[in-house]
Length: 69
Image 1 (cartoon, one colour):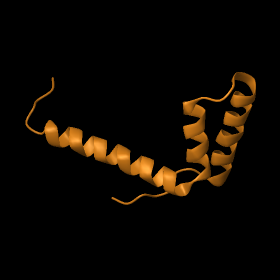
Image 2 (spheres, one colour):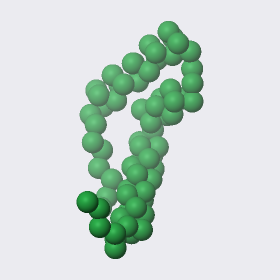
Image 3 (cartoon, helix red, strand yellow):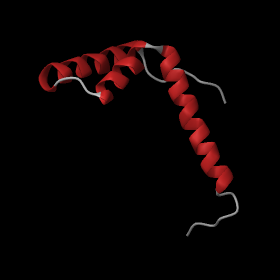
Image 4 (cartoon, helix red, strand yellow):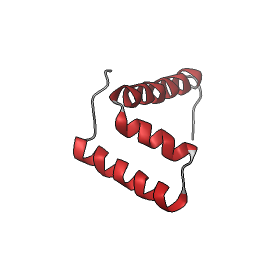
């Protein structure tokens, strides 16, 4: 499985604008810093996607013999 950009540049720009408006109103936080970084860097989005994939794969590996009802 390979990373494919899921969002359009317009969607990313809109999210960045929302974050900037939020920061102007409420101030900066670690969450807004991370979202801004996500909006500004394709490498950051790729690494974040890879982290989520690894988390799911680890969960599936650790629970391959368990049956959930």
